Length: 491
Image (cartoon, rainbow, N blue to C red):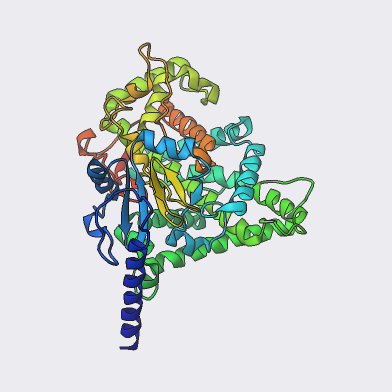
């Protein structure tokens, strides 16, 4: 009874705060939106499996800039390429804040690159971009790592002997090993069970964050912390992953040679020592742990998920798979590993990869932004403390930007002469000051891994193309494709 009384009291306080929050902004021209209910806000009006669909529908009534309430939290949603571009690029400084997402905050405790703001974010982003470039991100050195890893990936698929297999961790092991080389200075054997458990934790975390229970945690973290549920199991697994990261950092501290940094962790430790007397220094141990976790998780899950989806799409469209293979055979052949310089000679293959990313729409709502001060935008005021969702889904499906936005069509990235063409609305890595730090690495991995796979294999599935459903299994925080059995037949 005592716990129940506390929960009731807390609930009443939330109702009061929510009411004051909604009604206490008189004189401020908020973007329009549907009337919220106390505590719940507009939650009952949202599609729980794909909330972005509800936001698109609401924008038809309220326009491309609208206000909704997710529980007690005020959220401004930005819809369409022109609106999102104006915010993230034309007013980049105003929209560079990152929202304190409760789930991420519970994992990272406010530290690291992903959810920080202000001087911490500036220092960590500048250092991370510089260091990753020094270690070859987007350059020849990284290209060689990926090409070498592609050999292991091809070999592992060859060992399936053209029998149906669950390929989920084939791709995540390869992609994660590239990040491991950058961050930890090593790669893991594909048969290493501890490595596989880490990858399963990544997958479970992404699944949890994208399901209703994970969304509920972000809305009412104080409530779910005292309730039993799946989230406690997920957090226990994440704690073990954090312990792995700390163990790796400890080994680096014991073997550090300041004159010869081996990887990202070494460079961070050297920087930490140099900046230790600066009171503005953000190179703390806690920020190192959190940032390594950021890089490890984001650099594994998003790219490997995109590879899985790419293979699904190629099975679904066998004529496109054949055309890609013909182009690869003509330009590279089947023996030499692909190189990045081949991309300009493979315009159709490049267009297919871009179209896969557009259709997958891997982060439909974008990682939430935040108003760190009052923002004037398109005649409205977005008050300080407002969460902002510049919806990437609405950009990647904008019918003013794409000829057939709801269909898989590589022609979106080809001109009339079948040469590759860029599109300003290709924002899968977001845009502006919060764009993905690993964009150049992800682009390189997708090209080199996919071309190497299509050189050596033709991909099918047991039930044939019609058995595959390309719509995501879940599509909230992330769009996650459905699982399917893969047959990799050597060519």
